[in-house]
Structures are given as structure tokens and as C-alpha cells.
Length: 182
Image (cartoon, rainbow, N blue to C red; front, side, top):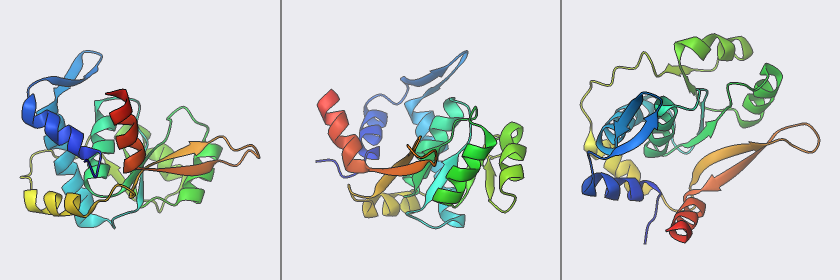
């Protein structure tokens, strides 16, 4: 029985590490490289942020956004993807409502977020050095403490009143869906 959604990824990495996990236009990344990059970013998050908190991702749909989501999950936090095409007033409403610990973005989109909330910490994924060593104990200890009812992600509804509402989804919801899909 799976306790967190990352167990599926870990199982896949062990069985087919060199298989392509994500294709993004002309770029791709293997399961092993995806996991390594996500772990390195997760360690950075763990060393500088709280756990069981929301962290926003403001990136176009890309390999980097997937690395960010997985890294946030490895760190024991909940990711919240924000659409880069969303008007600033709506992004402001979402950020005010959810109050994330930080936003993972890139240099191209950093000023957009900074203009909305200058005090919100930014992690620039395109300036992050994916060259450190992985502290496996730090990640493994964090993974052991994640349970299936812990938050995995937050999605924002349109809100019938025009005010976005954050809906928290837990690991169990994704595990149940994955089991159903398999």
C-alpha cells in the first residue's frame, strides 16, 4: 500500500532509470535525472522553508515546472501551480488567499510576481545550481513522515463569487486515482 505519491516515482526510477519521463519540445529528461534534480531542489527548500506549507509555482508548462512540483512534494510541502497567462489581479487574489511560503519561478517571470508581492520569497529555477550533492537521509526522513492525508497540491477554482478558492488535494486522492487508472 502506497503512503505518498512519490513511491510510484521511486519505483519507476528503480526499474527504468534511463527511460524518458518528460518530453518538452526538443528537450527531454529521464526518470533518474528528473528525480535527481527534484531532490536537489527539495533539499534547498527543506533547508530554507517550513514543511507542510504551500509553495507556488509560476512557470510555463515545462520540464522545469514538473521538477518544481516534484521537488515541493519531496520537501513535504504542497505545490500550487499558477498559470502564467492569468491576469495579475487574480494571481494577487490567489496569493493573498493561500499565502505561500515562496514562489518557484524563473528570471523571465520573477518581476511579475515581485510587482504583485515584493516580500514573497522567490526561488529562481533557472539560476538554481543543480550541482550539489544529494542528502539522501534528509529526503528519506522527510518522505517517511509524509502520510496519505497530507496535502499534495492546491488547485484554485474560479469561485462563483469571482473570488478564487483554494482546494487542497492530498496524496491519497492521487494514489486512489493512480490505482484506478492502472
